[in-house]
Image 1 (cartoon, one colour):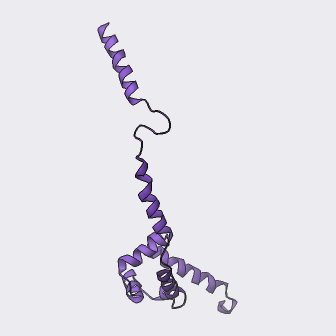
Image 2 (cartoon, rainbow, N blue to C red; image 1 turned 135 degrees about the vertical axis):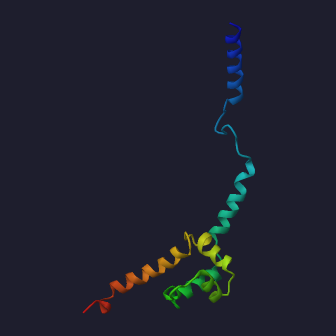
Image 3 (cartoon, rainbow, N blue to C red; image 1 turned 90 degrees about the vertical axis):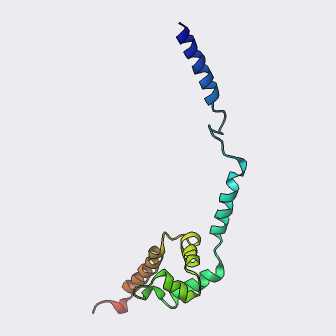
Length: 123
């Protein structure tokens, strides 16, 4: 009998301690927790237009993606950037998964253009 009463009291206390009110959840996040992520999103959403233009020029005008064995280090050297900065630009600011995905975007676009050109059709 005493064990049953103690068990009921223990369950009532545990339920009161674990009660979740509203949408805050069991462990509500502090109000300032959203600020750093918002800042990161704004920075990532605003790539440096000068760097983007230089990279775009290297890929579309100079067709750097056609260079066999092109590495991110070689492209960074060509652009006069530290490798980490070019990696940051490609991955975080432009949204590519990695350098290979970035190169493949241009390579595939080039292949599509070549395949659609009747002058390059086998004769």
